[in-house]
Image 1 (cartoon, rainbow over the protein chains, first blue to last red):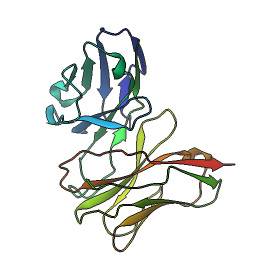
Image 2 (spheres, rainbow over the protein chains, first blue to last red):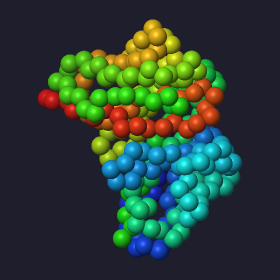
Image 3 (cartoon, rainbow over the protein chains, first blue to last red):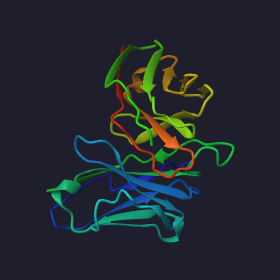
Image 4 (cartoon, rainbow over the protein chains, first blue to last red):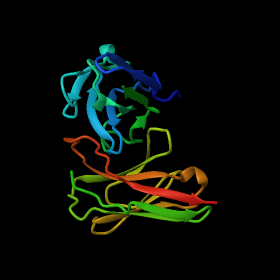
Length: 120
Length: 111
C-alpha cells in the first residue's frame, strides 16, 4: 500500500512569492490533515478535511494560507504571499477514521515525510 | 485536551527494553492515550493507543495505570532504528479537538 505522498520535498522561495504544497493521502482515507513545524517549535495542527469538507481549520495561522481538497482526493496548501516566518516543515497525514472507537480497528494517522519550506 | 508530561530525553542500550513514561494526572474519563514517534527526517508515525486496558501490538506495548494518571510505552528490545522522539498525546474520544503534539521524549539508542 502506498503511503502518504507529499511534494515537493523541499521548496525555497523568496518572501512575497506563492508556493503550493501537495499531499496525496492513502487511497480510501476520507480524513486528511495538515500540520507544520516551524524552527524550534512543536508540531502544530493546521486543519482537517473529511472528504472535501473542512472539518476543523482552527489551526490555520492567517488568510495567507489556503487549503483545498477538490473531489476528496489529494489536497493542496497554498501560501500567498509567503513570509519569512512561514519557513518550516509541513506535514500531511491521512486516516481511515479520525478517532478510535468509530470502527473495530484503528491504526492512527499516517503521515507523509513532509515538505521543507524555506522562505528567504 | 489534558496535558501530558514526559522526560525530555532518555537513553537505552541496544537490545534492552525501554520504558518511556508519561504523566497525565488531569486525564478525563473520555480521553484516549495515543503514542506517536518521529524518526529523523520523517513525519510522525502512529505507535499505539489505549483507553483503560494495557495494549500490545507489533511495535510496542502500552501499560496504563489503574487510575489512568500515567502510562508507559514499552519497547521490548530497542534497536538503533527506534531512536526517535516519542510523543504521548491525549485526545477526547469525541474528537472535538485535534491531535496535539507536545515536546515528547527524545530516545537515544546506544549500540
